[in-house]
Amino acid sequence: MATANRFTRATFAVAALLMAAGASASVATLTSGKLAVDTLPFALEAQLNLGALRVKDQAIVLQAKKGTDLYANADGSEIANKTPRVLFQPAGDFIFSAKVTAAFNKPFDGGALIVYGDQANWAKLLFEFSKTGAAGISSTVAKGVGDDAHHGAREGREVYLKIVRRKDMFVFYTASDGKNWSMVRSFGMPAAATMKIGFSSQSPMGDEFSAHFSDIKFRSATFKDFWQGE
Image (tube, rainbow, N blue to C red; front, side, top):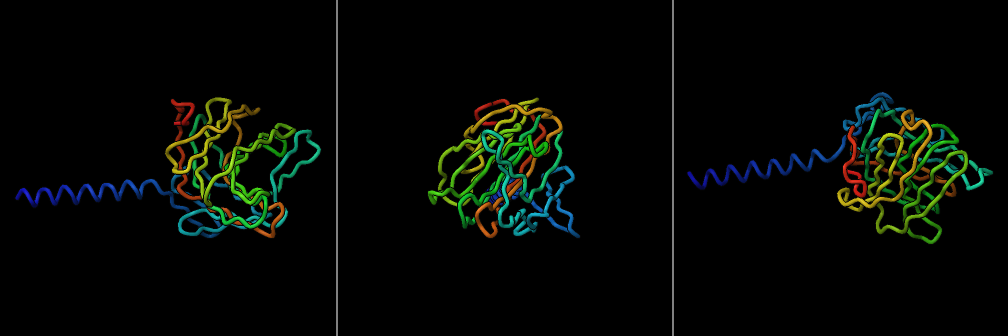
């Protein structure tokens, strides 16, 4: 009987671990052209005139056409607002993250989590391929003019990105495992409460590029640890 009980407890423990592992993954579906993600309790707005959307292995795949970019330089003389994107409108404080996987082809190919108000007011946290031949993280905060920053190289072809909002402040984070986060930058935005957030891909110098977004998570919550965003 003791052996049977130990076997039963072990079986339940394994089942619990499997359930926990499955619970961490998001499921994206595309039905009759309508995208849904089980972990995002919002209507999703797809802007695809500059690309295409599909679902593969339960992940969002955003394909960017040639010449697509979301960019603003430091004096506002060069602005690009042409990327395929999927956006939604959250309310209040939140914690939003996803794993971005990319098979880079050309410099500046990339997949991003974005904050978007209009063509003059937006921000992006971007996993991109640099001219040096290395994948890395960059960010831009645009308020009429762009404040662009690079945050170092990353090994491999996938990374976790996170956006957190507390009142009028947004914070960007990255992680290799989706657990141990590094704070990238914080910033304020005008009309932060009305900003949409979501996913974007770009290929300013390539013929096309696809970014995969998986393990998508969203919580309506206020972070307790600024450095982890949790």
